[in-house]
Length: 140
Image 1: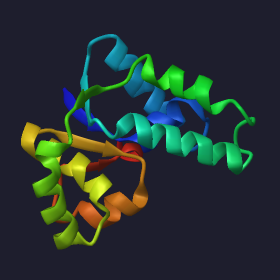
Image 2: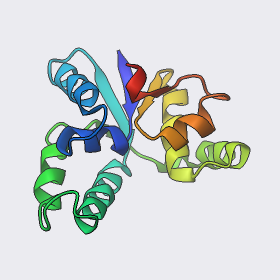
Image 3: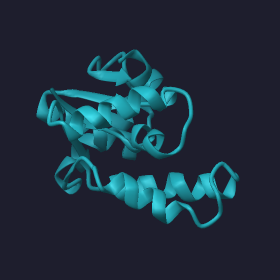
Image 4: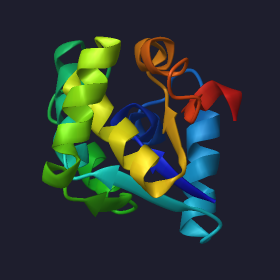
């Protein structure tokens, strides 16, 4: 299968929380070439942001974000340029009132004809009705 994967799912690869087991299974299947994973090229920055925020919240040790980010990036999805997706992402954002960054993932999944896997319940709630290919990680 081919999936678009967001940073909320990859975050669970390195920071244990609910559904980390599902995220880690998806990662292992990707490593075994069972799945292809794609993400817009904003993915590395979003992962870094989530990890440094986890440091500030003391969910991970101060200074650990870089090592965790490097871990994620060893099996990062194939990064796709986001600029060509931007017009569609803005239209989706205007339609759904969901942030443009989340909508870049939706635009990519729409273009590629595949599911978008996210652990972000707000994204699922805001996007799944008009875009049924938006799939909650927890449902896998």
